[in-house]
Length: 194
Ligand SMILES: CC(C)(COP(=O)(O)OP(=O)(O)OC[C@H]1O[C@@H](n2cnc3c(N)ncnc32)[C@H](O)[C@@H]1OP(=O)(O)O)[C@@H](O)C(=O)NCCC(=O)NCCS
Image 1: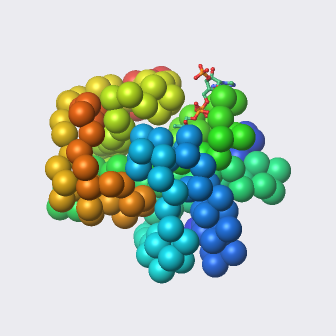
Image 2: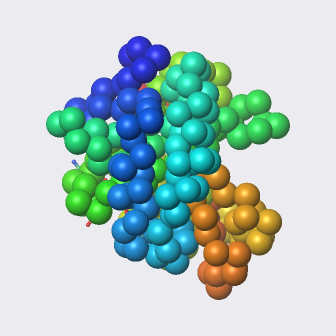
């Protein structure tokens, strides 16, 4: 692995650059992709240009495997994954992913997430990787279960939490259901590889 890319069987994970604007606009314009993130509302171009893409380019860029990764299959953008240290923990990182609808149903998200999890535990001293999802987001829950992550808690995002989202622009209205936090501890990751 170089600082700039990682490979799995079918996926190349590479760092974002300025040319990815159109990819993120297309991804976030699909109401099915955004269904459990914003209720289906597309992300505005200005937010992608001014806030989201700069974050994706800059965050932890020189500290792989942390940060945001554009996922490509055969040279074509299919989505993104992220692994970000959770502030003030010193030992926990948070996993995220969003894929184009045309890439769903083939295990690509699971493949990319496996790569990031392995790299996270191999190349840093983190002790736990967490991921959160909405209780009705079955495809995302299935990804987390396939990764060997376990449900740790149910909780509700507050309006302030939603307003602070850095990767989408959810409505400030709270949804009726719970959010779920899954986690994989280093020890369980080691056991799963034995
Ligand atoms: C969450 C999301 C990435 C899941 O995508 P996905 O394609 O269902 O997930 P995977 O890439 O792991 O593929 C799994 C599917 O491929 C199938 N599959 C085919 N080949 C496979 C393989 N080699 N390995 C694993 N699964 C494979 C699985 O059976 C599964 O299908 P199923 O759900 O019908 O059983 C996608 O729904 C998405 O981008 N949603 C919008 C954004 C979002 O909600 N992100 C999460 C926020 S918390």
